Length: 348
Image (cartoon, rainbow, N blue to C red; front, side, top):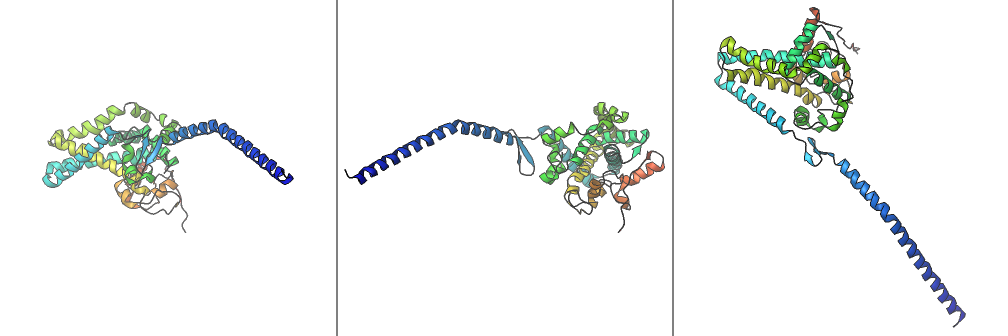
């Protein structure tokens, strides 16, 4: 065989040997990687499972371990209340009488008391400490808060402080970025987001326990709410001017209670979504005079979230739309309220 042919054969054998060796090395690398890849896949699967634990479904509700986190007892309760509320309003318009009007006016008085106890009491006094109140005023506001039926003062103020600190995040109990319905009432119809639950356990609220009125109400809330929010509104019209218990229940209990709830909820929904933001454009809360009219002055929300310590929750001179400020001012004149904090804005 010629020398050139021998060299070509040798070169071909060497190349084949190198290819075989390369194939063996590649197979070894692949075999070595397989356990690592399988571990990584398992880890990714575990991580994705954890990520799916609280996956949001649209703007409204998240999925908790594959199940919608609806609280059916609350859905039935608030649904029945809303149906009774609409029925009572239709009944008043169609079959209204002098007795019904008296009861409706009585319900309105209770509404003002309960709404003021939320705005001037649990909100401006206890949540933000924007002013101080002597014990007769604190007692009046505490009992009115029982009429309002919006949980205990301690729970209300604790949750509201979390709302301000983590507004429009998952820790916000009524995060408006999840939609109007969720911010308005949907947050009450679902399980609380775990981020919010975690923050309620560490938010500062020790000062609330130091108030004996708050402490007493928290530990006797069920009885107080039943007496002042249900029994007295039900029986006072019946004994005072001969109202039927059914009509008294409709107007003095249901209409009054649901109206107060919606006016409070509109602060969480409409006042976070509709209106101007003249004080801080980087936050969602808005200036909404319509909400202020219904919520006795709580709709100037861009101002309030910018200057939380202002007892007026708005600039001076807003007039009748801030009935809560007028109430606190009158209490101050009587010596029941003092140390009213207010922001002094520079005029351009």
